[in-house]
Amino acid sequence: MTMQLLSANHGAALAATLAARANRFGRGFCSGVYPITPSTECMEYLCQQKIEKGRVIRVESEHSAMGVCIGTAAAGARTFTATSSNGLAYMYENCIAAAALRLPVVMAVANRTMGPPWNIWADHSDALTLRDHGLIQFYCADNQELFDTVLAAFRLAEDRRVMMPAMVCMEGFILSHTVAQTEIPEQEKVDRFLPPTDIPHRLGTTPHTLGQIEIPHQTEVHRWQHHLAMLEVPDVYAQVQYEFEAVFGRSLDDAVVPYRAEDAETLIVSMGTIGATAETVVDMLREAGEKAGALRIRLFRPLPQDAIRTVYAGKKHIAVIDRNIGLGLGGVLWTDTRCLADSGTVVQNYLAGLGGGDVRPEHIVKMLTDLKPRKVAGPPVMMEAV
Image 1 (spheres, rainbow, N blue to C red):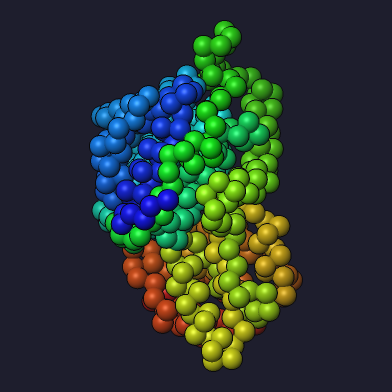
Image 2 (spheres, rainbow, N blue to C red):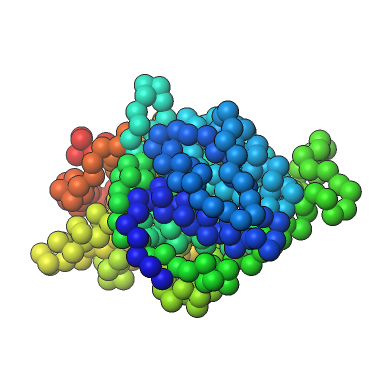
């Protein structure tokens, strides 16, 4: 292992490079790339790497970037790409195709606000728009976690029980351009962790087609199969965690990460970097004698409902912080998890950091000040209105 000072963008690209080299005895590696802020540095770094059996293909659009990944994954190669915001939106059609074709493409997403009006800062709405189309979604809180999760995503996505794309999300600039010491394993260890890619339905083995027209019943069957495979992800991920620690000697975070939550009466729930800030607030409140805890959701699709329900149990108040908004309803994380709390628990939504705004400890304290006297949950609250 070596320590390198890397941005999260560079860490994602380096993890993809190590994964690419690990498939040199398989059918190689390919990446389709097209630049968009703030993910551009990821693909620039990847383009500079030497990959013995593979190519990084510079194309004319994000749509084509995923098209390259679909073609090469269908041929049995290990595949990777990176994008953000409206670039991801341009890629949506092919992201859905990759998922429906059950191709294990790994994609790093530097979460950025959708435009226009144009905004290049962090917001989870770009990735969340794809949450129900059959792609695994991880949200990371720091550089090391991002690097480790990209490696783990290849192992998870390529498992025969799963076989679907995986998105590894990092907040634009907040994480993508933040430089931190990152532990990088030797290639030999990555080779041990990532066996050669084996896509059972790849083209070139027996005559068949991918993406043909279906009658309604066939679509029902395929969607249900995809759903059942999604349900397998938490158990397969637990096995990936075990193998990760066995090979690399350090743990890979769980699908959900509770912090001082076991005896908490008030719980702060979030995704991404807000989770680290929430833990700071929990420590402050604990010193003041308040029973506060935090829960960071790392794996958002499939949603680990049982794990979340276990942490939610017994809580009086839950603040769900969303760096996104489902217009006309509220934050997506709150929408998906409020039903998992006990009857009578106040689960209040707070919208914070939309468009890349800071979410500092004092902002979370204000949210909890608003939450504490509530007997029932009200409509979502914008942070500035607290």
